Length: 81
Image 1: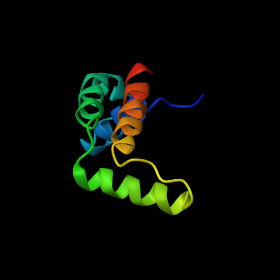
Image 2: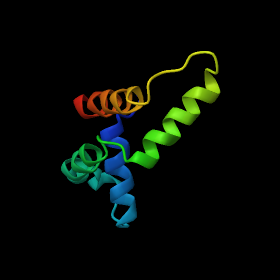
Image 3: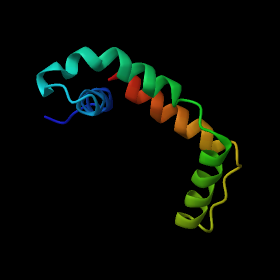
């Protein structure tokens, strides 16, 4: 079964604290908080996303404000898992 982003982050937090993998569920609340905090990209992240999109799609230019909206939608989807 595919892991949700919340599960992946919870497992990573659990591992970072060197606790047993069976305890990852106790990290779900923290994982949600971490992902929620990432919802709004920094200007540096937005610029990098815009540059990456422009490189991947050189003939299709999107307004710079599209990148944060896409990022936020992706984080919202991760939080719904």
